[in-house]
Length: 110
Figure 1 (cartoon, rainbow, N blue to C red):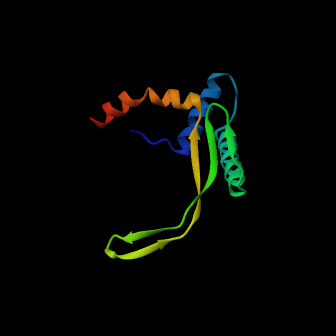
Figure 2: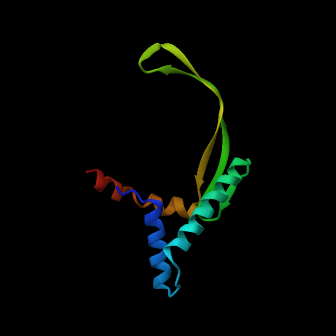
Figure 3: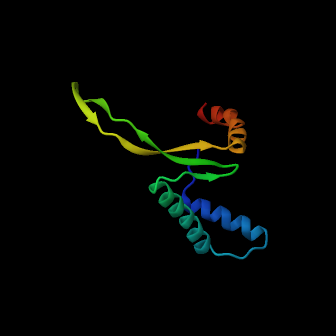
């Protein structure tokens, strides 16, 4: 399976916009993508939920404190403090589209 980096995403978006006759530089697309990421991060840092219709929702959830084990010395308990974590719930369209990729994933792993 391939990994798509932010740079590759910017190139794809720039190419798709160019195919539609929209003349925009990769630098401008990069700045828009980075602004989107920054705004989502800032909203989540303030405890807000970010919802993008047909894509999904990001929200901050509390992970409760728990006791873990030290893998090098399993007899010792390691306290893990409570923390905030970002959870993503995919939207309906994303779920449906991703559900069709199971065969592709199995073929790549074979």
